Image (cartoon, rainbow, N blue to C red; front, side):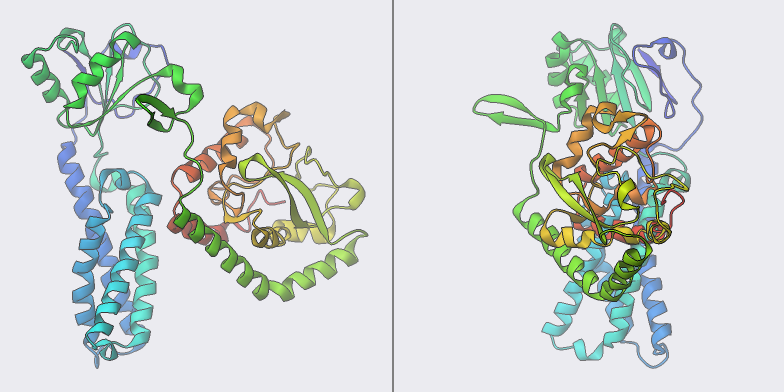
Length: 472
């Protein structure tokens, strides 16, 4: 049996087998099971400490620490209720421990439900009068904020905190196959110890022992042997996948059935009815509230734009929206009318001579985007989603869809005022093809992992990038 260990940082060009001919000396690290236990216990302690510290801070602010002990009873009920709800919501499961945003969403969801349940029970048994409302409100807000920040940081830096990556991925690669790109904890060449076409209990025992510590196994084999490997791994009690490079261009999302025939799922379609209702209600409420609150500022900007240069207050440009349908997007005009680029073929640059004096300020502060709240009310846009692009937008002199054919996939949702790409700093001119690919990857990740909790987190993170070095 040829096992190659200690390859957690291993990556190579597809088709190369040079790195599989030599065995690297693995550095010592704790067993994966021990690391998973550390991750589970560590994150649970982080959650509980955030809730306890938040209510203590609320008590100190409320100046009730010495005279009122009801908060201790509240905390004694809230903590176990949160743990039970979080466990039931899989807030500590492996998939959610590998994605900071999913970890945050699950934790925040469990906390909101736990706090709501405690308040409901207190009201139902008529003891709610004993709980200071301000203290409960402050403690809840502090808990939610600290839990979101702590969960994100813990999962983001989990490997450094607990002493290694607790999630093991094994590659089984047959000798005549190209090595798929990616990182694997263990690489196995199975020829000398397992043949899936031979039903030998001893060989199956060897395979089971090789895979027992893994969270996931990936098999690279010839097409005619895929069925045999599938049968061999279906009883292995581990997430198992078979590499099918010919499906790369289809970008399948999963498997389905039509009648008695299996099908490849290539698109999920719209969100469920309830999720669509939640997102639309959230968008409409936030956009309407923001427009009313910002009305004086919008009026001042409109006057300044009109006084600064001749032309309309608003700049209307055709952008690509949901389902690849086009719509007119609104912005405060920041360029001189005769030099405006309706197609968007030329991206704005630093010290752009087309930009007016007022335009420089509102672009730098992202205030030129505020009229898009009207697009949100109309239903053309959402508060959070992939940013809409102009038809002539280019990266390295190529139209966006010429750079990456997946570009059209990002339009499965309404475009947004802000998005995951923006909060990660992918803004400004697309000088290189990588500038677009970075944004596209973030957009596709957002579509795959949407939740209302992630929308809230992205909105919160947007405020820190409003003044960005690439905003000009």
